[in-house]
Length: 426
Image (cartoon, rainbow, N blue to C red; front, side, top):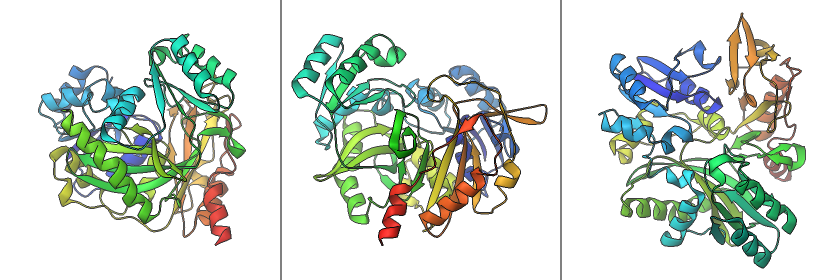
């Protein structure tokens, strides 16, 4: 098969790395890709917002299957255009992608389907939102309704922070994503990510992970797209996963089908495990980043037939097997991220860092120029390792990080701390 993968980040590098191992793969194209991906796939300059050009490329290169990595092209309807053109595609329709494209849409779905989630209010003007905040008190969570690259969520620990967050949203801090806001109850517990594939009617649970959203050690600093992750998440026991499937995933898939927009793709459920059980924080409609990196390190099964099962409605005929060994990934980001940062600083030492066979380095924001590897984004590298325990995987990952010579970067030094604490207690 010839496959086209859309995207350029660490998630897409991990997906490309996994797809490239499939025995049924003929040629892998990635648009636009990055400096890491181009080592084993053909990176092409193709604009995913130009649907006609993507379709023409697929026809010209006899593409059998398109895998869409990021959320923006899904919300923009690329999957619909490709499907209409007769192409097989992994990724939900634009209507189904509203589960990520609009936080208000998802909260309303939760109400219809009786999915446990935080109490909320949905607002299209600042004064109404502020009035709700004053009624509810703090801590409270303010979310820009639309896509905001993982940065549109403000956990306000006092009332003034919440009011300021509302002003930021309506003043354009998150662009069109802040035209509406969702204000919701602050949930206490332990966060976890749960990944499930769906072909519109069948569901295949994949694996769990735990992300680290804050920029700095000790979960301090601003929210980011994710500074590291590990899999599996110990808080997600077999019993808890069964409960999440029963109370959250199956009702969601049934409701989306009933609404006329069956969900086909990967559902990434962001959960809070509270004293009352699991509650849905949010849905993403693509593999997480950096969670995808640890999932692909643990996946034993050929990824390609599983993704095809989603597109062809045959998910009930496939299964996924996993390495029992945990995996961890440490994100190296450009200094200044998630705020403003400089690009094109040189990175050295990756060959030495990846010498351990249990370590893979997935590129998130890199370019190559004049035989040099340069940073080209906020989150730039994902140093990922697998080992018998989380503690050992973390040691391998950080040993690799220390071999990378990149003065322009920074990273958290405490990724996986919850899982390590659990291991030490056991």
